[in-house]
Image (cartoon, rainbow, N blue to C red; front, side):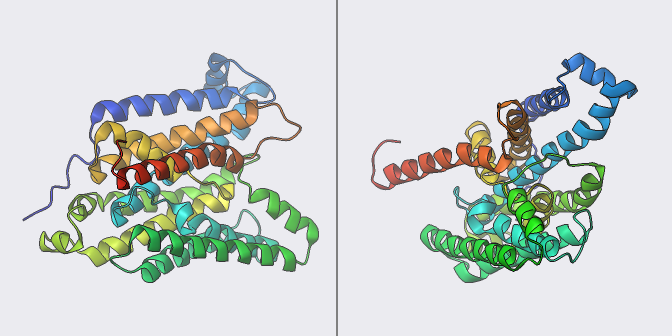
Length: 340
């Protein structure tokens, strides 16, 4: 029996609405900053590129905005893909230690001066760290791991990656570089340029293709791995594609922004209420919702009055932790038989 692989992008109306929201937030992002512009002035500066406004919009704000959209989409898609693979609504790259491991890999390259911050070695190191983390989790937890085992394994890997990052910072030969890396780890898109775009985009695009190609398999996996295999799904290949795809996306994203958590958890759940439980239909809306969330957070980081710009990782954690706790309480009520 062949698995239906089409219409994983449905429903069309929701995707169009989310795409319009992302576009509106992107225009707002071009207008927000120390030198405030109206949306119309920002769009005009983007088109003609003349004067100081054109320089600000094209050279400073445009790369930052594009990165926010692309990286937010990657986190949203990665979260939806992991949830589809392990059939667990609490699955998220940060819970599996992927961002922490990616940050450790990128930090090692930067802190020890192995390559410049704009070198392809940085995202490659981040991808290697994320790949080791997620691959290790799949190997440790096993094929039929419970929620408890999966979360404990992810917590152990995340803690180990955090300790490795701390060790790297302690051993860094230059204390000023170590301090800069420590601030970078809090997550930010400040001062990102076209060079960072060139670094990230190839890995992100490959990640999207790999994860989207698993849409039909995710639908079959809702029946269990044995049933999916009987329907013609290569479960081992699907697991490999998801592990590598998430590692590529998360590793490249963290190498550019630092550690940003919970977008991959929040985005799929926001859209799942609208598209239903089919994991294949969640992928594209989750990516668009992730882009909207991270772009909104980046705008808020520039609008909140402070001596220095608020870090993105701080804002996403302030949103994500209460959301995660509410999900845990909901799961507990369901297990106890109380109405949700």
